[in-house]
Image 1 (tube, rainbow, N blue to C red):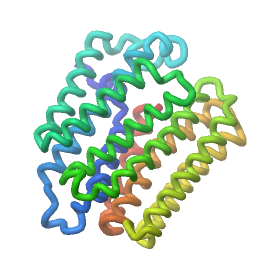
Image 2 (cartoon, rainbow, N blue to C red):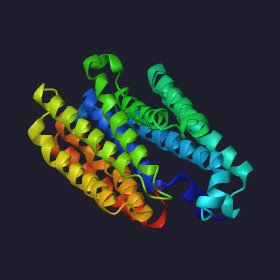
Image 3 (tube, rainbow, N blue to C red):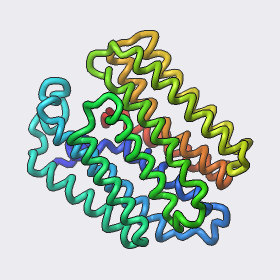
Image 4 (cartoon, rainbow, N blue to C red):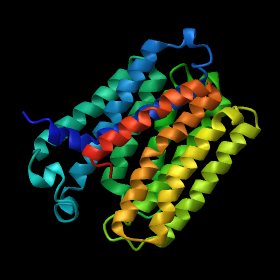
Length: 295
């Protein structure tokens, strides 16, 4: 059995970004403050859960996009016939159910969040994807819930005043999703300009967390600057040369820049050395992105 087409379906480079979401959420929950008290087993289960949830959601994306991909992305495994539609459905359902069940092994709170992630991902893939505002917002909610999944490693009740931080990935992923509308034809300069404006909102929210004293701004600033450079440079390039190849690169860099963004939380709520460890996921993700499509 050739596993390569199945790996192409789940987009491994993207899965790494989902792992970084959970690590960031764990940091925000405070579980990295005293490492000897970190619930390691729960953390491992959450990393497995988010990997399955993201993979299942992205496989369903290809399932629902099959007719479009036959025209726009004929190189994908389903249009090429490398993976049958039946096998793709079995894989997607198995991955989502595994992600949900593994989360319930931690506690009901994590399980319910995993269930919500699955439902919002299916809602996006089946119904809201093509809507200009609701689609990007829906996709952003999936990521916000994934950050919340990481925060549930202890319990959301541990730091209820920090739950609003989950709005940050909602805004940022909405910006990336807006940008992605021009991947095939380009000609979406205004959408990318709006996306950059949303990125400024994200930057303001990150600085606000630091100014309120919830996150160590000095620890996290280098990581935020890294994220701004990686994400912003690609978007500006896509505005200047609004062609599909540059838009695709902006989307790719935006997705992968989630890793330095999440590293900023780990540095700010944990320690900069832990932030660096999360940042080391970036070269792994970039390496995988050379072999497997991100968008």
